[in-house]
Amino acid sequence: MFRQLREDIACVRERDPAARSTVEVLFLYPGLKAIRMHRRANWCYRHRLFFLARWISQRAARKTGIEIHPAAKIGRRFFIDHGTGVVIGETAEIGDDVTLYQGVTLGGTGKDTGKRHPTIGNNVMIGAGAKVLGPFRVGDNSNIAAGAVVLEEIPPDSTAVGVPARVVKRNGVRVDNLDQVHVPDPVAQELCCMKLRIEQLERENAALEQELREER
Image 1 (cartoon, rainbow, N blue to C red):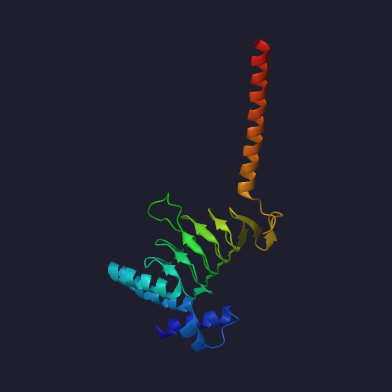
Image 2: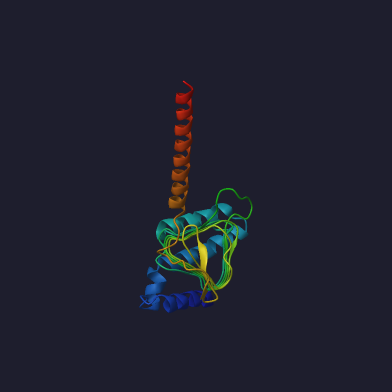
């Protein structure tokens, strides 16, 4: 237990340049506190102490602003930076050396049963406000940009951006010309299609009215 705690503190100090000391990380970092409480909740859940597991996880959410279901599986050296608003669902699985920033959701879409939440590979970074929704895998060594909404599998060694997210870099090489500024807006695209359809219907309606007038 103490070896694992030392490892958790070391990973925070390595990844957060604002961390000044071991004591500060141990007592003042909500991400570390949430992970430590999750491990206790997960132990209770695996031993069928479901009520106690949920009590611990809900207490952690109140104290830290980070909600992790006690059944979620989390690997070693997991780091939640800042942490407020992070939600991790019941069937989520997280590998080793993963970093999450504030506002991240590892959730479901509401249409799946059984395995409903994502599997996150090793050495993955998920930026602030990103949503990863569904029972698919985010491959090892991948990065999810801040604010992205990921709805399908991300290959290893990839960078994904946008809403919905798409891979823009693979193995360090860009795969298209998108960036976080010029990602297509799906809402704007849908509105454009609707506008074109309305214009077509108006033309057809005008043609029908003209035919009726001529018949009279």
